Length: 537
Image 1 (tube, one colour):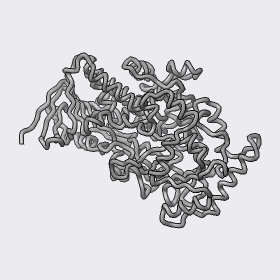
Image 2 (cartoon, rainbow, N blue to C red):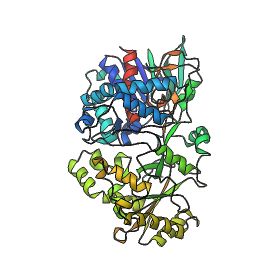
Image 3 (tube, helix red, strand yellow):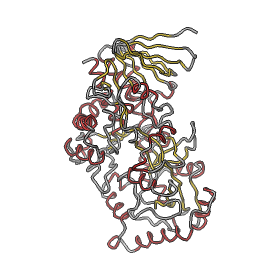
Image 4 (cartoon, one colour):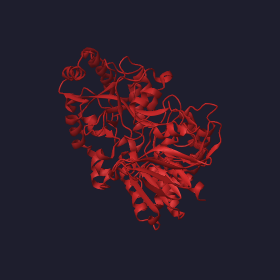
C-alpha cells in the first residue's frame, strides 16, 4: 500500500491546546505547519476541550478589578511551596520563574486578543493546608470554560490569514521519530483511518502529545509508592485516551531526558462516568465543602478533616493510607444542590454555552437537573430517606458489610452537634475552613452556611463513592527555556521541541509534586508560544 508524505516548515505531533497555540504562532510568522493528531476531528483540542477551563495567571486586570493584590514574587513563593522541588530541579524551577513572570503578557493578554473572555470573579483554588498554596485567588475561569477556550483557538486557526499554510491530519498515529544528520525533524506512522503509512518532514519537529495518565497500566508502573504506597485497586481514567507515553519512550530511546514521571496530579473525587466512552472512564467532581469525607468503613477521615480547595495532594495521600483506597462523601440534598460541581464541560452547560441567565440561576438555585441525573445514572451515588438505610445501600453498593452504620451515624451526629452549638463555639476544623471560604464572595455563593448533614428537612441523604481519578502527568520530557528537548547530558537535540503536558508542562516537571490549579492550560499556552517563537523569532 502506498504511503503519504507531508512536508512543512514545522511538524507538530498532537492537536491539544499546546499544539494549536504553537501552530497559531507559526502561522503568524508565515510558516507552513502540519499538525498530526491521533484523535477524530470532532475532538480536536484534546483534554482542554472537556476541561473546566481555568487559567492560573498573576496580577491580571481581572484580579486588580476585584482588589486582589498579586505579584510574580508572591506567586513564585506559593508555587515553590506546593511544588516541593529538590536541589537538582534546575529546569523546573527556571520554568516556574518564567511562567509567573510571563503569564500576564504571554498568556492573559494573548488569549484576550484572540477573543477569550473571563468570568468576572477569580476563583480561589489550592489555598494550602499546612504550607502556603495560593495566597490569593488566581484561577481565571474562561467564559465558555474549556470548550469555549478551545473552540476560540480553533476558530483563530480556521480564520487565520495564512490558513493555507496549515494542514491538519486526524487519526494519524506517530510511531517513529526520524533522526538525520544529528537532527530530529521528521516522523512516521500510520493513518488509522485508511491504514496507510505516512511520513512527515519538516525543518523542526514539535512534540505536543500529552502525558502518560491515559494509560492506567503506565500509571501503576510509575506510581509514587514512597509517598502513596501501593496503587489503589480501582483507579479511574480521567485523562486523554491517547495520553499513553509512547512519544516519551521514543524520545528516551534517542537519549532524550524524561524525568519525574512518578509525579502526577490525580484527583481524589473520581466517579464512574455515567456516559463513559472508554474503559474505567472517570469523571472528576468538585467535592462539596460541607459534606463529610469518610473512609470505606464510614469513619470520618482525620484527624485533619478532608475538605476541597485547600490541598488536593494531601487528600489523595490520606485516602491512600487507608486499607481500602477509596472514600465516601456524605451529604444531603441541600448541600448537593448548592455545592456540587463537575470538572467537565458537558456538566456545566450554562457556562459552556455562555448562557448568562442560566449560569446565574445555577449559582442562586443550584443545578437540580445535573444533580438528579448523577444520582440516577452514576453508579457511585446512593441516596435514602434515613441514615441507617443509606448505610445499608452503601454496603450493598460495595457488596460487603464494611460500613458500620452505628459508627457512621455517630460521626455525623458529632459534626451536627458542633454546628448546633453556634458559630462562637464551633470547634471543628472543617467548620473553620467553611467560615474562611465564605469570606470570599466567589465561594460564599456556592458554600452552605454550616449545614447539618442529618437535617430532616434536607432529605434525601446522599453518599458518593469516590475513587482516585488519573488526570495529569507532572513529569515529562526535559526542555530548556526555549522548549528544546535535552539529552540526558543536558544538550539540546537539534530540531526537536516539546511543549505542554508531554514536557511536564515545561522543563520536564515545572509543577514539582503539586500544582496550584489552572497552571496546566496556562503552561500549554506559554510553552506553545515559546517553542514557535524560538523556531521563528
